[in-house]
Image 1 (cartoon, rainbow, N blue to C red):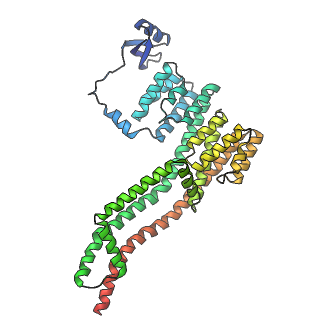
Image 2: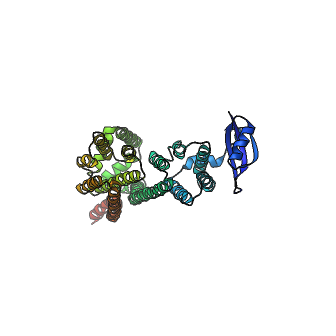
Image 3: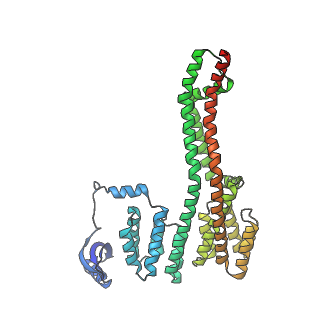
Length: 410
């Protein structure tokens, strides 16, 4: 079999550049004519063969930037709209690949279009790019193809991706303010200790007055930060961070720290609500799309994001394999409140599990929004006190010797 690169126009007059595999050039032309394409050019090999010296800066830039969740959300929404309008999948992929703003996503969509043109199923074509289209996405597309309801599944995929993007944006917005303020507070504290305080220390030394214990303590810290010994502290912190990452990468370590995070006051409750919302929304979307329960649970387990929830999902799978019910395993987990367990139990009894899971997800989405707003409103005054306290601690240390000098002069 020989690979031929061709340029052709379809019935609508759109230019297509692709490859076709056939025994001969005549057979390749016949294959293209049967698809309704008017061939302009055909030759052996790939289109635009390049040497090692031909470097595409756009390709390098797209590899650096990557494909973000926002790009996937836009693609899903547009793909669902085109398919719902009755446009064939091949033409929809061709349109989306040509108009995608992200160069990396555009290249991937062209590869998916080529694979589908060669006879590969849409879900298998997406599965070749797991870094962009995860297992959840591929499973839902496969279920839509099998059930003949690809347009409906694409709408659910689009809605779910938008939900995931909103949830991610909420979490990032909640963490952005304290993170930025903390970084600036540490920078200001470091500058005051290492640049401003030493100048005051030289003045006090020339005056020959004994420094207060608190001021001397700050000066000792300043001298330590400006000495080579500080390098050992930095290396120790890096080693501690590396050790934490190694421990967290293990199953027991991740479970321990994730369990600990759920017990943190205020923040632990928010983490629990986010975990429940993510679990129920993902599970409901997969079941409603026609994905088998055990396959859905495996996907939910991969995308849970919390080791405690992962262990609960494993228990659910074991329970179902033994002929049990989902709510039985949930009762043994302290993550899911009795209300959630009861609603899921009712959904199993009535055969409307997907609807009950969606209702739980809707409820906890509202709880997450309320929790994030409450956390943000509580963090704002706390961070103001935090940064004011750090700066005030240095200022007090600088002014204490001055008060002592004034007392001596009097």
